[in-house]
Length: 315
Ligand code: TXA
Ligand code: MG
View: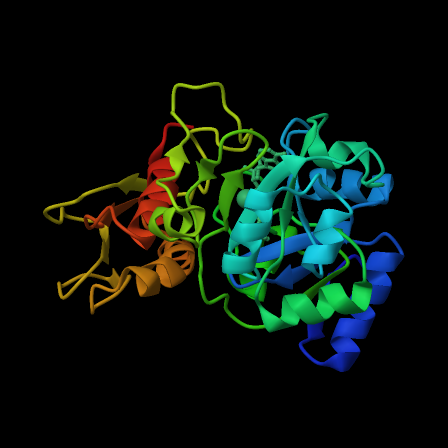
């Protein structure tokens, strides 16, 4: 029988070198960023990008984020702007993705953008991701490293939970500190917040010098992956639970009695960093219903509530 299991690579020079070699050969390698684990493939190799969609079971109309080793590299892929420069100087590297017009000479495989004329680019902050990108030296397509529609992965074990045997390797850098995906800022027209994430709207507005415009839910979906149901655990979710009911698993916030707590101290950043891991844990324990305490809708709470409402949406 062929060995189809996925390699777990250590977070050292040898592991990074091996990961970069595999990527150059057109293979799929999951890697940790500060937000969640990404499923990396050379964004210039059409077959490698096709393999991402295949491994994730991702619809082909949902475009991918491209990770770059530097701002200079981003400028070779997209038409840069003064606003992009200001934002990148203020908030890169970090959990922020910028959507900009794709350059004709970018050399990116067509299916990365799913036919759009824009490209989502991101310069991650996690030291291991940066070392891998520098060693690889090219643009790395990287959606979250999970089967499409399921809970995003914040550990190598989460990655292997849904992708073992479907990808060549995972670079194991331990848990991701931010814990929710990057904020996506559209800069192809008026600056627009397309997905709340690791950088808050307040931080974006400060860097822009004016309040950032939020995408209207009723508007045509401009971040095509932002469909209602997403991040779905097996269990059903009951949100803003003011009380606990018999038989439910209780996911708390703040100093309350519960099964797992996102942050006893009521710290929203800590809660974001625990969110997916706690959902994975309660799901694995076989909970039928997970009741979630109310999460304040400020700062990182906006991204947390976004993920929770998608996880709770009808499938
Ligand atoms: O933190 C993150 O962003 C993680 C790590 C691995 O970097 N990546 C991630 O990728 O969350 P993914 O594929 O799970 O989510 C990417 C989102 C999707 O909703 C997709 O529709 C949107 O970005 N997107 C990609 N290209 C776009 C574009 N050109 N215009 C608008 N939205 C785009
Ligand atoms: Mg995802």
